[in-house]
Amino acid sequence: MTQNINRRTAKSPSGDLGAVLEICANSIESAIVAEKGGADRIELCTNLGEGGTTPSYGQIKWCVENLQLEVWPLIRPRGGDFLYTDAEFECLLEDISFCKKIGCHGVVTGILDENGNIDETRCRQIIAMASPMPVAFHRAFDMSQNLEESLETIIALGFVRILTSGGKANAEIGAREIAQLVVQAKDRIEIMPGAGINSDNLLDIAKTTGAKCFHTTAKDKFASKMVFQNAIGKMGNKDADEFNYEQTDLNKVTVLKGILNKL
Image 1: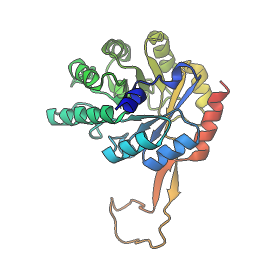
Image 2: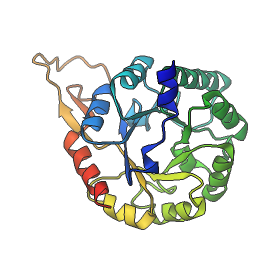
Image 3: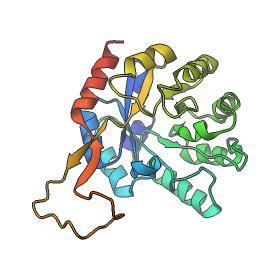
Image 4: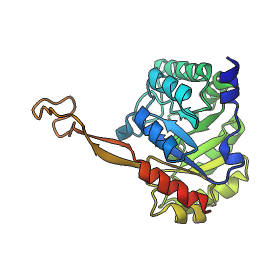
């Protein structure tokens, strides 16, 4: 248990290692590639098609026990909006409790009320359940009705980081809005640009926003290694290509980290 406590209370690399690269890893293999490519942290999730949902206990545990970079699982019980039923919220808290128990460095989550405000009551419960493990607020922030007010609420609640596209479709389009959030935050919380970041726009986004950490999937499509491929049977929808899959790409991670190292 001592080892777990040390892992989850370890200082984030953003404090002393310059610009930080966080990879949104949608599988164990993506997590392994993220580490090999030099990423500082992963947001471990599944189901990227819906913006990410909570990975399995087995995936979380394997990454914590076998990887050296920071492991922050996404705690999101389903796709869609961020207004959850009592049952969904109970599940969310149980997932956070598990992550704390096995020694995750932190978790990433977020909840809104029906009016698009930060759900302060439930977020306080999240912070209490996670403590002393830190909690980051994901892009539910971008779906709130007032980013400036939401930022102050999230800071007051005790979250340590916000993932945001500035309320826009992606971080490149929302770079100026992200820059305003960085100024407003005044080092009280980490503002992390994310959504659509790649090697072509990372440098410009970094310069425009003044942010110090950045979030991306760095993904690509990979062909199945199956020799026998049943082209008739379908596990997903009729248009799905089940012999291709999305995964973090080693070269993309390496290139992104190289760009950040030069900032």
